[in-house]
Image (cartoon, rainbow, N blue to C red):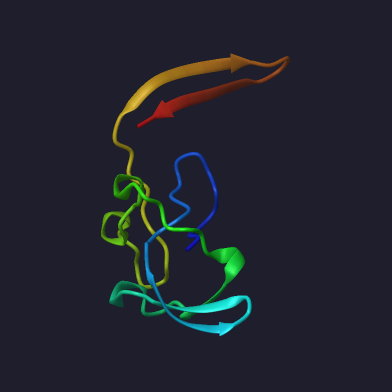
Length: 98
């Protein structure tokens, strides 16, 4: 299931979850945990992704810390590298974060 915005550091898939039933040709009902009780159970197939075979690549919902309003806090682990890129009239700082 897709989750949040796509971005370099954002987890955009959570799961895996069992499919409880097929609602329509392009919609499925999932068995979601109690932390996601505010989320609708029926999803379009475009929102679903095939389950990954490597469980280490799946981010559990407990590690994300999803709140009741479906938001989460970003936690930086370590800054690996910092750079300042010079454009014509601007300086743009960037950091590589683990």
